[in-house]
Image 1 (cartoon, helix red, strand yellow):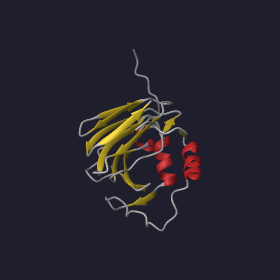
Image 2 (image 1 turned 45 degrees about the horizontal axis):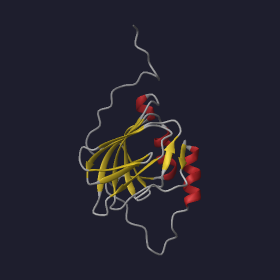
Image 3 (image 1 turned 90 degrees about the vertical axis):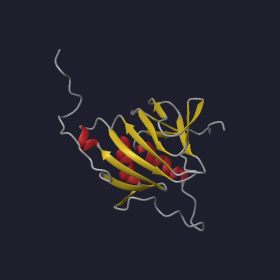
Image 4 (image 1 turned 180 degrees about the vertical axis):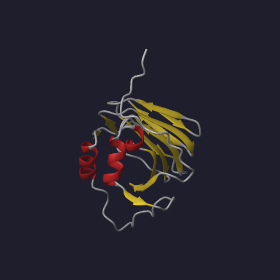
Length: 171
């Protein structure tokens, strides 16, 4: 049986520690280790560094499955009614169209390895994030700043196949 290629042929990616493209995103550091140009558009592989208490609104991905592997810290995942807290080695596989979210322990920070089965997450990071060469969390927002505009965030997410879910997960 012949091999079936999903996208264009690509070359191996050998990324040194600290390598990749780095983005400050919603108070976190997202380092893209292999993106759409490296994988023929098949996946985005990232390392995420997240501050204590970091969380996202519940959401689902229309076209991409998502995998998280906890490297450091404690992260609680919620997916489709189930909730689990993980430390190093915990893994969450979140299929497309399944409502999910995660939150970092207030004792954080946390680091995770993250894979999306497509290029949309990377495109969202590029639109919403700020490129950086600094391999650290961004400075926290000034308390006098306006809170993030959830409607604007929802619009950016939607352009990249990510839908915010109105109901919050149980805690």
